[in-house]
Image 1 (cartoon, rainbow, N blue to C red):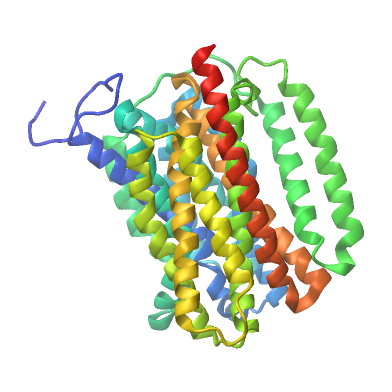
Image 2 (image 1 turned 60 degrees about the horizontal axis):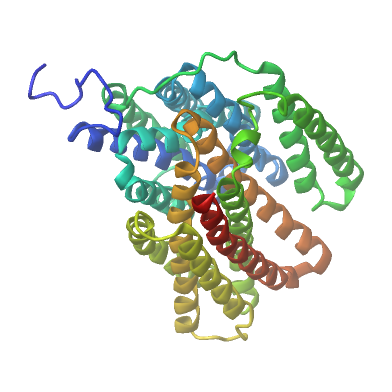
Length: 464
């Protein structure tokens, strides 16, 4: 083996990769995650330009966002389960290659239909990357540094999602919308070259792939979330209720199909672990709160009399504070209880959201800045410890299922948060943004309480 090549170690140590291969592996994981998460939000600002360029209506152009999000959500857990069978490395590499090729298709799409189909394929690739990223992190870093590694991953996910609109504005200021997708091609190729040489191998399960469970899962979540989003429109209410009803029926069939299985697609075996299930519940509550706030805040800030430019500036402290807090929280998570760190973080988020909800018209810029920063700090101190608790509470051979649930909880929470805000706007009009902040604060408080309950769960398990 040549000393000049950092990628040629043939075997994966039982407790992480050796340096420097570890750093190359985490770089590949981080780059792939950043591209996948950025493409969830980077297109929002460009929708009017896309609609004009392709001769589509504003309503139809929203499918550019929905197609990507739904593809990720419905395939996240199935691909995480597949990773346990064929290897996390293979799923990640295939997903990254598919994401890169689909990005080229998006950049060259001649019409909205082609763009939407390419976005579905791009979402499938992103699901492959996201579904196994936490498991790959677990095989990359030693157990003693797992919190630090998860903190890096949480930092990249959160800041990529928050900075998407800002980066999109910068790109659109100098070129057209097609480069929002085109830039993924060279970045994807570079990341793929690193990943092929650096990503670790993992243990594989001998169980067969559950195709029936995959179809039921995709149908249940796809229909239920599509129906919730449709409830925001008066004319679509009957169809929305039908979609939700069919989604619930498929969900019932999914549970019946999955319960008897030893390693189910929906990991009931992991959910029987109280620390794991409480961590997932905390994650869902927190991401519903976060997305509700991030969707409502631009409307609320402008309702209070501020311009669109001021809105962007006022929201910037949230991701900046989160970027500071996440790595610190990741290091603390290796030594302190996730229940306490997560509970205090979400309590801080709840306080920040309440303070934002009660801001009067004409409030100073300083009033927005420190309240936004408080929210970002609170969320940053919650996310990394919570993610570490999810991964550490699962057996090593079920890392794929644990990572899939981590990503599914985030996407489910974000989808529910956006749907709830749309419904509040339908019911209360412009004032819905203020009600959304109140709802977000209540959900953050609920998440804090659930997080603190983990302290008793951990105590019981340690004394059992």
